[in-house]
Image (cartoon, rainbow, N blue to C red):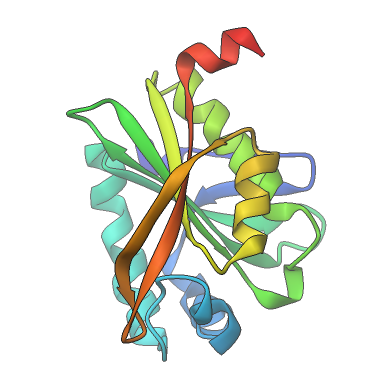
Length: 181
C-alpha cells in the first residue's frame, strides 16, 4: 500500500522509484560533486542503484523510510531523491536528500522537502522532523532553512566522510512549531 504513495509539488511528482530509473540514479548520484556533499557512495554504480531501489519496497511496507524519486512534471526527468526515514520509537523522521547537479539552485529540493515535511506531520503524524548536513554544504543548509527547519546545533567531527572527520549541522522542526508560526 505504501508503495503507491504519490505526492505532488508545483513542479514535481514525488513517488517511489522503479528499477527502470537505476541507470539515471547512478548517473546523477554518481557525480563526484554530488558525492562530495552527501553520503552517497562514490563511485555509485548501476548495481548500487538497483540494490538500493530494490530495498525500498520493504522500507515502505514497514514504514521505515519513504525514499521518493523527484521527477519533473513537465519532462518526467529524474531530479534526485527526497527521503523521510522514520524512527518509530521516538515518532520522528529524518529528511535526507540529494539532487543531481543539472538541477542545482532551482529550489527543487526545497519544494520537495516542504512536501515531505507536510506528509510527515499530516499523514504520518510525526512529532519531529530533522535533517543534518555537512557543515561545509551551504546548499543543503539553505534547503533546510527554506523548508522551515531551525538550526539546532553543530555536532563536531561527528561523521567519518571520505576518510575525514566532519562536522554536521542539525536542523529540526517539531509539531508544536507548526501552530506557532
